[in-house]
Length: 181
Image (cartoon, rainbow, N blue to C red; front, side, top):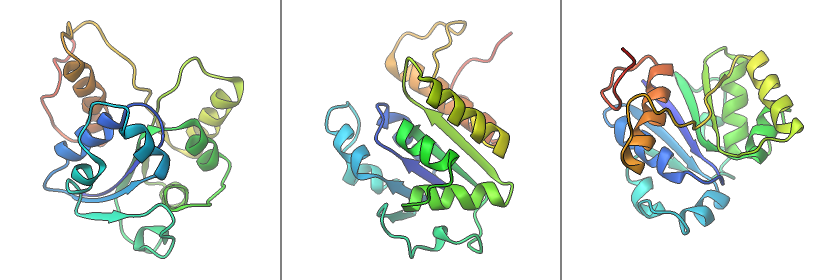
């Protein structure tokens, strides 16, 4: 698969990092926003430089001339992980001011899989309404929620659960968490 991964300025940069690790062997196109780079400095994850090495192609958020900014560039899906409320709002309202938002717009208009992993709590009414707009446009809204039935013991367990759910949404097999039953 050819997958665009966008890491935006919300807490949970490790989710994007872990997804890229799991997508090894696939053609990945990575966009890390400037705000994500700022957040990464506060979180226990690889350096941004190391995260970029996990992707086949890496773009700056302002690189609007990149192939993935065009709907004629063939990709299969896009994951925004973590997704800031700013990015969620921009995508939901068609405000394509950077490469993340433009690539997401292309995915939606071609009815391909757009998976958005919002990372904020509690939610404002505006955030909920923007999620509704994205859902109605065909996106999959996959909040980074914790499940307890598989008895997570570490942050890694919790991270793997969320990333496993993303892989489920991409219809990819994995063994990142124990399934129900």
